[in-house]
Length: 128
Ligand code: HEM
Image 1 (cartoon, rainbow, N blue to C red):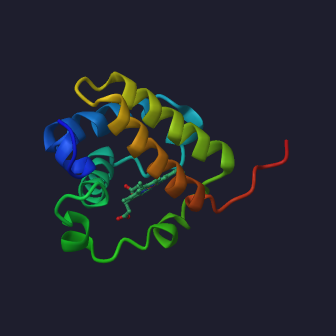
Image 2: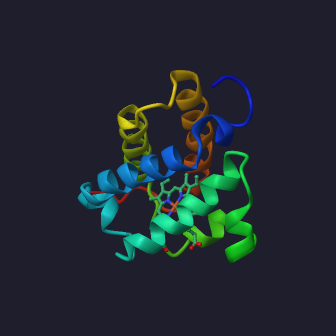
């Protein structure tokens, strides 16, 4: 459907589908999966709540967990530039796999997530 917020265009079911696919890709990416706590149900629930508000839907994350302070909440996890690229690659694949998200909506969401992902980098690339 045209117009409205990203949330209106994607809807809660497809958002859930998108994030389920996204974390399947994350889990299958060893260098990325390594820094996650391993409680994937909790990780998915928090991200789904956050993305609901981020895309213009109800502020579920705020209601459940308070202000996101996303950069601060990522500081315990070493987010390197290469992990940010892997994170975005997983999202790109999930967007391509999720039926019913039109190209403009996918491009808009991906662009917004690229900006946030870049901001989450908190650790330099390890020197080999
Ligand atoms: C939490 C990694 C980018 C939103 C986390 C956690 C990790 C992580 C390891 C902890 C998971 C948990 O506590 O269950 C990364 C990496 C990124 C990235 C490697 C690459 C740039 C993003 C982006 C967003 C985001 C772009 C938003 C669009 C969140 C949220 C949480 C979270 C909402 C839960 C925070 C909390 O309540 O503890 N992330 N993240 N992350 N991430 Fe990311």
